[in-house]
Length: 402
Image (cartoon, rainbow, N blue to C red):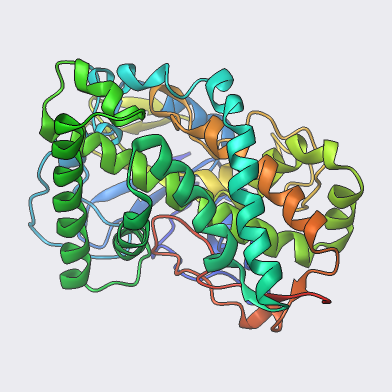
C-alpha cells in the first residue's frame, strides 16, 4: 500500500483558468488517488495532505490532533527554516487545544446561538437595505466588494462587539492586510500590531464605560484585558473576512450560473438551501492544519507524533462519495454536513451569524437589482491569491439597468 501512495508536491497556488470556483486541479487529482497523500513541506518536513471527506471530518474531531500554534512550524509553500513559532496570544482560542480553548470559547457560546442570531435578522435586513439603497442612488455600476460584501458583515460584527462605527474602516483595512495573502512581511506585521493596539484601547474603553455588546458582557468574567483583546481579534477577523468573501464570491458564482441565480430569484424560500450549497461549493476557508500529538493510524497509514497534516476542506467538500456530482453548483442540493465551518470543538463559533447574513443579503441583492450582471469579462475579475487565508475576490465590478 505504501508503494502506491500518492505524493503531492509542491502545493498548487493557482486555480485552472476559467475555473475560479474549483479547487486547484492537482488537489482534486490527489483525492482521486485516495483520501490521503504524502506532502513534503519546503523545509523538508514529511507531512500529509488529507482530501477525503470522511477522513477530514474524523481528524477535525480527533483530540490526538492539535491546533496549537507553536506546533505549526511548517508552511505548505515557504521554507521558514529554523524559525520558532510562539504560542498563540492569550484569547486567540482557534490556535489552542483544551483546556485553554474551552476557557475562551465557552463564555461566547451562549452569545452566538441559533436563536440569538435569528433575532438579529431584522437588524441585518436594515443594514443590507441601507447599503443597497446607497448602491441604487449612486447609479448603475459598483464594486460589489466595497459597496456590499465587506460593509454588511463589518457593520454587524462591529455592532455585536461594540466597535464604534467610525472605526470600522480602520479595522477592515488592517484585517484585509494580514489575511489577504498579498501584504509583505513588514506591512503585515504593521497591520497586525495596529489592530492589537486598537483592540487594547477598545477593551480599556469598555472597562471604563461598558455598553450593550458582547465585549462588555465579558467584563464580568475572570478574563484579563489581554485575553479579551485576543478574543476580540478572533471574533472581528473571523466574523468579517469569511462572510465578506462568501458574499462577493457567492454573487460571482451565481452570476456565472444564471440558471441557479434565476432559481433563487424566483423562490426566495430557497435561500437556506442556497446558502448551504454555496458554502460547500466555494469553501472559502480552504484548509486547516493539525499536528499529531501521538502516532495515529489514518487510512492504513501511520501519522507519526509531531507530523503536520493539511486538511483540504475545499476538496473534501467536493468528495463524490459524499456529494454526488460535486463540481456542480445546485442550489436545490441537500448540502448539510459540509465542512465549510470546520467540525469538532473548533467548528466556527459564528456560523449561525454568517448564515443569517447570507440568507438576508443574497435574495435582497437579487430582488433589488433584477438585471445585475458583471461589468467586466469573468476572467478579468481580480481573485485573491491561493496563499490568502480566506479565498475570494479582490473586487467584483457589476452593473445593472437603471
